[in-house]
Length: 324
Image (cartoon, rainbow, N blue to C red; front, side):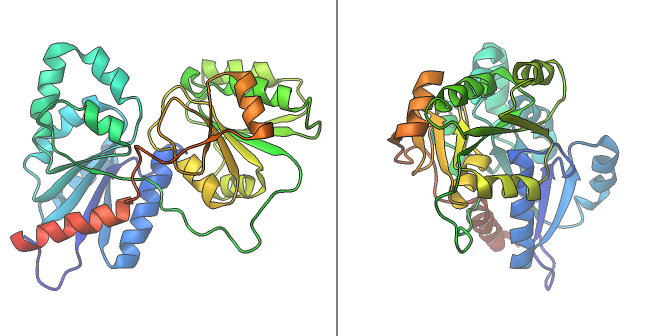
């Protein structure tokens, strides 16, 4: 039960100091918005056992809205016993479009355990409708949310000069298809000789990144940066003519939302739901090149939400009020 006179408390269960990427951008933005709303926001840093354990004594001080940000479903199972007894309202926020693959690999026993575990959460938020439909029957998927609140494009934003193309990839992992993007830009350069490619890579700097670096070495029209901070990413997107998103699957990509908000075109694979305004192409280098030069089929935004995390959090905080 909340104490009279105290601001609402929101506990973000996420990697507070996690790797650069969409999930970090999403929950960091939400924290800033909630604090402007007057809420007290604290973190259980799931990226650090020491920092997470230091927060445990504070979790039972008073009622709070607990938001567990995940890309991996097994963590929802592991933390379910904790979330079942936390004071306040608990929400599981699923960010990743990999849910289908994760469920397929679980088998009947783990799927049954997941179904039971989801009962520990008052709400489940998913970043697209497909994720919600895939969850086991009986789970409470109450909201589909967008993980990024777009701000109006800055004054003067509009068509870019030149042909800077950008692409973001988590660690060069295969489902991001960064090399397909490189080949697409190679073909675009037959029409736009001044086209250049900026690859914004982040995450684990391992074998996949080594392969990607090798693939672009010697290409003077490709620049690859690793773990660029938010300010640098924004600066790149502000100059970008076209952002490529050739992913094999996706949730609701934060970098896509951000690029659109900053006035860039986005050409993305038709393998996942995309925001309205994105230009779609089959997952093929030639098709991507053609869409970049001539335009792709416009997405209607079907399958994605217009409700943001902030609106969903406000509603969840409101739902706590009668119990306080």
